[in-house]
Length: 139
Image (tube, rainbow, N blue to C red; front, side, top):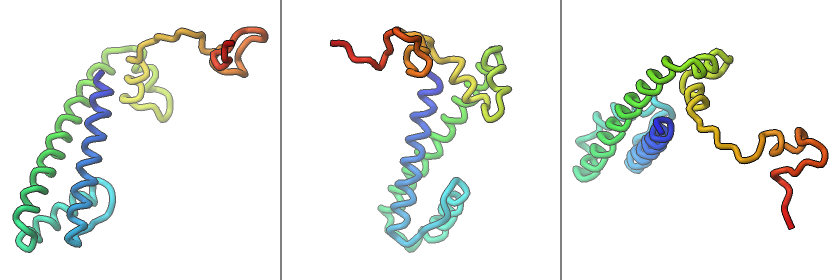
């Protein structure tokens, strides 16, 4: 559940960031992509605040505050995920794989194992001859 909540918040933060960028672009204020670009854009926004309509600034301030709040919530969820990861041997073992960090490892380790069909039956090249595959359609 922690991973799904984090995923939702990351999507919301991305949406807010895109909205902030789009609204500021309407006034000719643009900056590079990425978190560093957004920080630079917010500095430019503060520098040009007096030339922008008050209502636009109020709307942007609300979006910026919401993005900051969501970033704080994401950090709190990540801290809880890392705490969970440190206490589980399977997650720590998965994290030793190159390219797999604590977030990915804990997501894999926490995933419920509710397979109704054996894995090899879902992959045609691994299925036994004569065995029914999950991909086959019944009559």
